[in-house]
Each structure stands twice: as C-alpha cells, then as structure tokens.
Amino acid sequence: MIREANQLGLVISAGVVRHAGPMRQVTRCTGWPTLSEATTWLLRRELLVHVPRVALFWLEHEDRVEATARLVGWLRETYPAVWRVVVAYQLEGDIELVLRSAGAQIYLPASDSVCDLVERSILPLIRGDPLPEGREADAPAGRRGRRGVWHDTRVPRGQFRRDLHPP
Picture 1: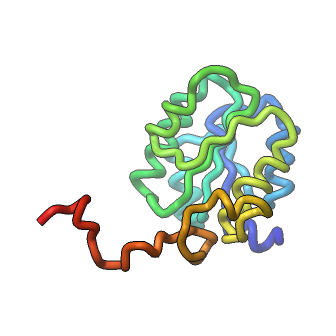
Picture 2 (picture 1 turned 45 degrees about the vertical axis):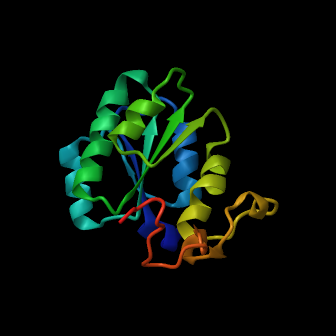
C-alpha cells in the first residue's frame, strides 16, 4: 500500500508545523512524502521530479491561509490534473470559501483522528472504491462508472437536452 500511495500524493504545508503529531499521522497512513514551509518555487522543484495525483495541503495556522491559497491557485493553474485537497486542522472561522475560490476541490476541517478522516474521505475516492454501505441510496440514478463516479444514463452521451440547449 505504501509503495502505491507514494505514487499518489504529496502532503504540503505552507508554514511551520506546530502539531507535528497529526500531520505525522497523515503521512504515516498515506505513505506520502511531506513538503514543509512550501513556496511556489519549492513546490515547482518538487513537481519537476514527480507529479502526484493528489496534493494534500495541511493548514493549521490562520495566518497561513493566504499562502496556502496562493499555492493551491498556482497548482490549479500549472498542474490542473492534480487533485487539490485542503485539511484545516483545528481552525475556526470561515476559510473554506477562500480556499475553494483558489481552486481547492476538497476541503476537510479536522480536529482529531486525522488519519481516519483521510482514509474515509480521500483514499477511497482516489482508488475508485465503491460507495460505503447505505450510500447507494443517496447516489443519483444511473450506472456505475470508473472510479465510483455515477453517470446519468437518462440522456445518451453526445446528445443535448432540448430544454437546456434550445436550437
């Protein structure tokens, strides 16, 4: 698992990590390398060696929200295929809008048990695992696609709905 996960992701922190224990939990359960005190230059240098499928941004300082948003935005512009995930550890306030506007695709507020949060929410999505028991009823009608994505089968592919796209 660790060899496979190393190819998948990179944990990035824009500042000095105060709570090393929870961040260490994430790197231990994923096996992903860590880039601390990241800047766009350091992130660019790291991505020249290997481009991961997922960039997990670790955020635990409110004063590093702007720097993290810059990194997320730069990654969105430079490597749009990389999934951008932000884990905000023990942060209060409304910072999700700032990070999503910058280009974060997944925002996870965390307080404890960070490894469980990552294992339940990010890793199944990356591996394309099926939805957990009881979640099939919540999924939209359609067929199961690659990576667990539900595709609506009511409109054949390549055709437009006339009410949405009038002639």
